[in-house]
Image 1 (cartoon, rainbow, N blue to C red):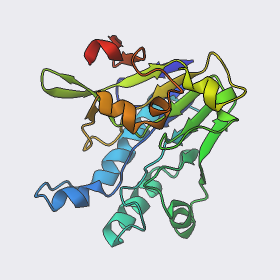
Image 2: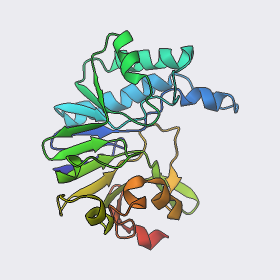
Image 3: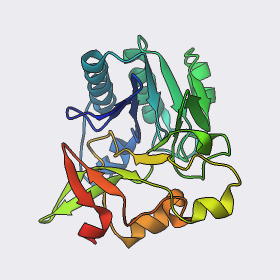
Length: 237
């Protein structure tokens, strides 16, 4: 039912491929610091197309922050978005809107791509959302919440390694929701964009991610995964 992919930082659940934090256009920000990256949108599209071909899902759900600009992108970033969606036009895509995705639905409409953009994408017993806000009452009835947003990584001997994190409910769930699935799991997905190295798991992680900050899910007992289970968050703090 739930599989972490080794080829790209993405997961497969109920035959749905999920990936997040593409941050298309971040290469422009990096270029101002003297780091030049070419064909970034093409590389992201290729990563997803490859993962799609290998896993053969019925749908791709993008977990928000498709673009890096919080507002309307400049000409170059707009062109990169156009190129990305042109290359992935053969895929069936739904998007959970992230905090960087202002005007995204408008941009897609202008580009003539009718891709649904919504705060949450709920399919069967799985809710997909970006993770910058708390889930809806409907979402917490699901078996899984799949989120991005945290840019999670593990600091191993000074080197960052992107990781997935799986958490069970915490004491805050009872305070905030009258009805919820007691067996629900939160699954956090690291950034797809290779230019984002990630943020090392720390106490700041708990404060940055609403689902942990509100104690909907327990941060310290959450399990960390890469190609295998690496331990609990508390083991690395």
